[in-house]
Image 1 (cartoon, each protein chain N blue to C red):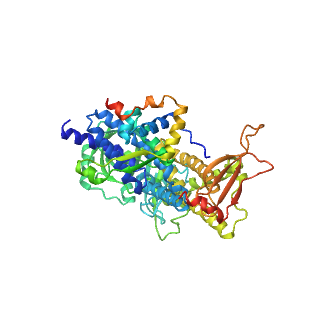
Image 2 (image 1 turned 45 degrees about the vertical axis):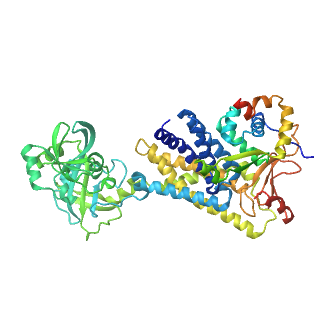
Image 3 (image 1 turned 30 degrees about the horizontal axis):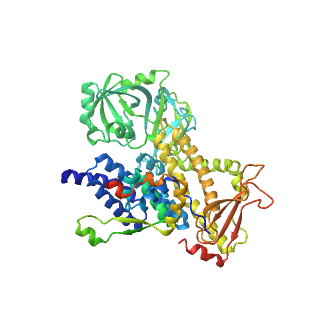
Length: 105
Length: 488
């Protein structure tokens, strides 16, 4: 069995935030409190390691709402397994990165 | 937030994005910019402060750097890219050197622009220092009788003194010259200006070309302007031809003395200066070499003198940056074996390679050296031009900068050549420590680099062992290629 990649606390926090439903860069920044210069390079690393995937919002939807399209991120199956291992390593991870529902409450 | 303020804020925040995007490959740039612009759009509509918006976009810079580092191969990694970058640097340095007037003049010194038949007459055949000076009394004595080889003569005695340039005080070296200097230099001086000088008692002044350019900006309407030299009024009546570097001692100006005034100078025992003359072309005096002439003094005693063409002074006084460059290279070559001893010992990858590959490697090395040479010539010249504060210091700065540049270049050439795949000449990547950490030396036994194209591995020992005494190249056969294709 291949060893799970060991994430830094910051990377685990970002992965937790994406898994919790914060699916674009700015919302991840808000959820984690991390600056853009940390969040985006960390997401590139996670995407390179195939722990998260990305897709562009359809142009038609963005055009209809008169705004630019966004790039959305989603945790992959490998990412979920890694996140589970990271939660064991960092037990307070879930509390540090709340879900969008908690944010809106 | 009103729409105008939002537009300004959007524009200001987009600037760092545009700058950061330049770090990326063109094909990655559009998507990266679209993501950051999209995020910025949402951020600014959240009515955040301008500072927060700006701080957000500043984060794009580390992001762009990360992408560049992990996805983009630098230009220097491929052989062609390396040569292109070196060629661009060489072209830039040559271009800058040609654009900076001082450096251009040193690279292409103007040829002697004075009258071609001018010579200095001296009792010693020297071109250095004040050795070619004669006394004003000797000049008078030697010019009493005409000589068939010399058609015109003039004399000037260098005098240093303060000059007042419209309230700006400077010190000039002015030659107290005989009136015949204007004819000798083929200068046309306006009679009305000379009459004005004699009427007002002002000394007619011939400016040197260098001072005319330096202190008066080369203004054409300089003639007739008055200034004060040694608290005496002087009027500029002419500008000398560009003979500054060709004179035994360059002057800032010449003051044309009347016959009476020069007789007083000649009567003084310690009035020494330079005797200029115009050689008769048909005479036996050579225009390029030091010759001799016998003049008869006023007491009919012959004087054996030397005639030194001004073009010889121009040659000796002119700076020769190419000599300083070669001297710097030579001195660097002397020091190089001591400084690069360890690097030279490690050697280059040449074993078990075909002649074609070896030749290609050597061609690449020679091409790099050829492109570095203009950089090594023009770079120190530019540095010397910027840093030189005293006359003559340019040579020293240029020579030392050339030595430093040549040593750095040699070190880089060896390191770069060694860290390239001998098959494709790409920079080897993915350095990895190999072996167990040594108990004796507290270090790993070596490091391995791999060619991104899958041509082979280079093992570089950190210290010589029975396993690997020197670096060794391990060629990977085509069966390994499949591992490397995925990375492309």
